[in-house]
Length: 189
Image (cartoon, rainbow, N blue to C red):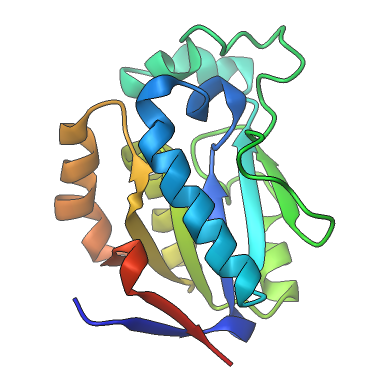
């Protein structure tokens, strides 16, 4: 792929579920490093940053199947831990960043996300996080229906299995977003 040159004024970089209870697990350390690079790029170019974390409603936890339930039931995902749902320390939150709490899989349903992005005049969202086929895909699908243009940074996303990640990147997300590698992203004034 050639470089993807995005206008920084109308773009936000969004991180999905990069919280202790999910991203704190050893298997996700490679994607944490990529998200650190994405965050550094956003900060260097003064691109708005939005962190999304999940504290699921009980009825959502009960309705989860497969991967979503496995992510939230792993050691360290104990909701009694006061830091379980905090964004991981490797991705520091600055005062100018935005943090949105979701209670379901996607970041738009039942949150202030749409209002926040419109208030910032954001039309394009660069997204990374965990899990590619759950939180990322759910957010992209609804956001695309609301008129946002998405770029999924495939090497800044991960799922419980490589197969689940690859299936989302190859088969479903291209209908709703552009797929890019971190090295291909550039921001312009």
